[in-house]
Length: 183
Image (cartoon, rainbow, N blue to C red; front, side, top):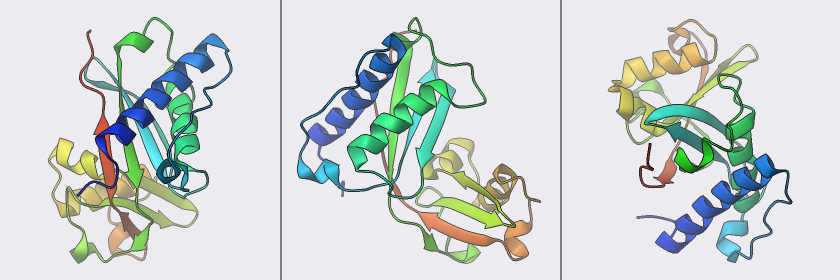
């Protein structure tokens, strides 16, 4: 069961694209008129793909802002602040595909309870933390142990830190995105 209707999903995706475009053009950001449901504080990630490849991904784990503001902020950040990529250009903008992952709150979980394809994970220890979205495990064909290990690696920890006192937290995400765009 989806928490967000098809119309709400479309509104959020449009808001993400409009926010990136306005930022790149140095124009004022959109001021959307959205339903109350999209004004509730919520964590979310924005993932950008270009020609089927990752082009940026930034998000907020905690519900720091209303969902619509989280979408605007993470879309701009994914386009311009992901340290793995150069900032997105206006020439690339028409070709990117936007995907949003709206997160549930984090909850502690034991390794045995982790469900690949259902849970996203955040593993932390000693001031380091790493997060992988639920769809990452599915896309890469991870089993539970590999998912835990790769989340540790994302945190900069030893792969077996999940077996040695690291904090494991899980979340679910409602994931939706734009159709594949032209290349």
